[in-house]
Length: 90
Image 1 (cartoon, helix red, strand yellow):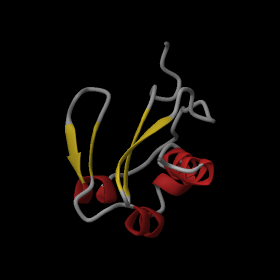
Image 2 (tube, one colour):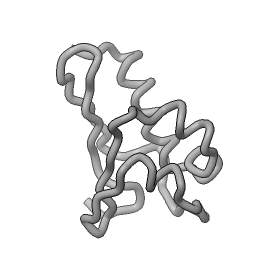
Image 3 (spheres, rainbow, N blue to C red):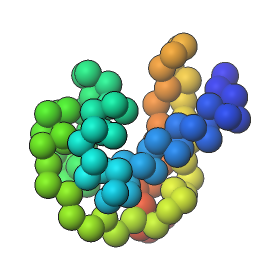
Image 4 (cartoon, rainbow, N blue to C red):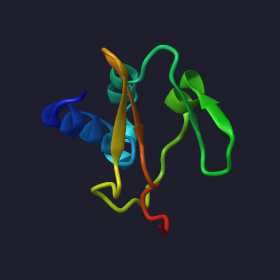
């Protein structure tokens, strides 16, 4: 089970992905993304780590803190964060 401090740290990191100043900071992203990182965009398209690091980041219209953020423990030290995308209706 994840501790409250673990959940807070994971939510803070996830929210960093939704802030222009950190999402657009290649060094910050390179430090925080796993070597095998990938994500799905709202369109359903899959983006690999290299595509995310190379992306030009404009303004991000996100409502923070994230609503309904949850994290599932997949076994130490892995967790899966999930929730509603910022600014999306319930």
